[in-house]
Image 1 (cartoon, one colour):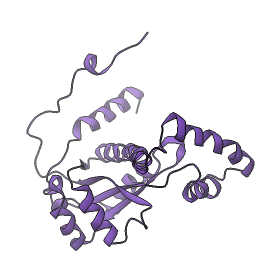
Image 2 (tube, rainbow, N blue to C red):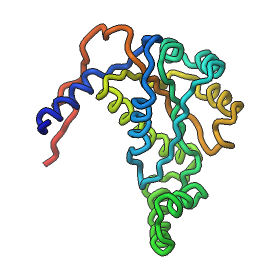
Image 3 (cartoon, rainbow, N blue to C red):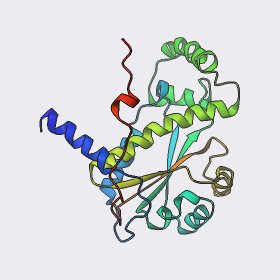
Length: 223
């Protein structure tokens, strides 16, 4: 496949993807395909490489019922989706947290002398450049922004292999938080909810063609 064909294939996937409100409950995504989708999330980029996310694949029916009751934007998706995912963001993505230090030393294998030079730089970035230490919420919101990169990549990769999806923010944050806390899924407050996303196969075609603002409305060339 040449570059022109590749580009068209990618654009076709973006055109194909839409916020699917109801899926065909009789159709299930294969394990291989869903692992592929998860892998594109895992391999996604994040600011300074902190990977501040976790993907909860919700299969428990009782938990789904609890979530449906407090998620007004997922009424059609939770009962019908092949796979329903809650993306969590870390609450402790500080440059000097136990999590980040473990990531640097044991995952990224950063040598101690290199890490020693990086720490002041990351501290300055978080504290002064982005003002992330002003509140716990500021640091969490920064981590949550990173998780949306993974969300976008997962939905796009799904579309490229003919799988539908729907990102979901239509839920009561406090109530979902309490449900996940009671289930022990927030790892003692090290995580909290960022966003939800459903995957499956559409049961209805979109009622209209995809609409977006024109290129000249969204792009400004600064010369």
